Image (cartoon, rainbow, N blue to C red; front, side, top):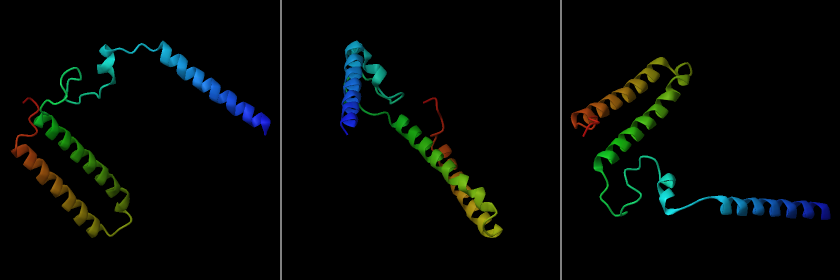
Length: 117
C-alpha cells in the first residue's frame, strides 16, 4: 500500500515537473496568436472581434455541412439493399436522391455555388 502511494506521488511529481518545464521553455507571445486561431474562420485574429461576419462564407459552410450530412445518410443505403424489399428500398433511396437534387438545383439557382464572389 505504501509502495503504491510512493509510486503515485512520484508520477504526480514527474508529470508536474514536465508541465512546468514545458511552460517555461515555450515561447508564447502576442505575435503567436494567429497560430492558435482556427483555420479559415473568416476573421483576422489581430483585429477587432466585433466585425461583421461574411454571409457568403457562412452560406458556403452551411452548404458544406448539408452535403456532408447527406453523404453520411447515403452510406447506410448500401448495406440495407439486401436486407429489405427492393421496391421499398428503391422508393426510399429515389425520394432521398430527388430531395438532394432539388436542394442542389435551388442552391445553383440562387448562385450559391459561385465560388468567385
